[in-house]
Length: 232
Image 1: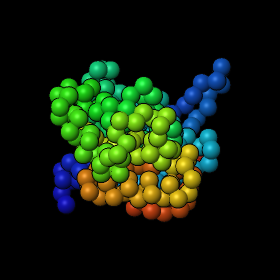
Image 2: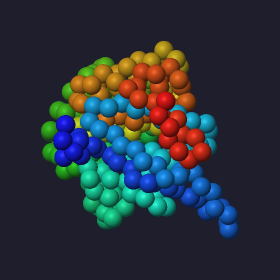
Image 3: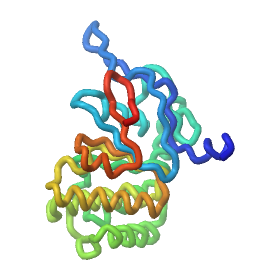
């Protein structure tokens, strides 16, 4: 494969990314000169002790925060140089986020929650509804589309959150402890669903997890320790 083809398959790339937090006059280094990339079709787990910086790294990869130094490139573009509205559109088109707590909007139904990213992208309401319904069926929620989050089980809420993350056909899914709030059986089914959809859509997937059994299902496992990513 040529260098140009490799670059075209690269979704997110970190170049010497460091993050330092200020605590009064003190500086707390969290990430130290990380080089990392994810390509189409890859599934990656990031593990590490509590406080190691896993969620911080995921926020940088998703353009939710900027590195202290270095660059995060999304589809070859340094996201720290983008204006807020440009970054929002870029993120909405290319990235899907799944969190430990589903972050579904409580006043909206499962269907309306999944439609939301498409409506933000100015998709017509009819098209957004059709695509959301198809994906909710794909994740096994076809009989729960009119239910609000409070009426769904934990596993159902997380499946709705996965559908919402995937509805724009993003290039990469960023998942932060997506099964941390679920029982073991439900956690396994959710991860297997994510991997199945990852393979089907040929997107990238990065999962931050403390669960070794879940990490072992990914194509690659990285350990975040001492501010560095180490391939296991």
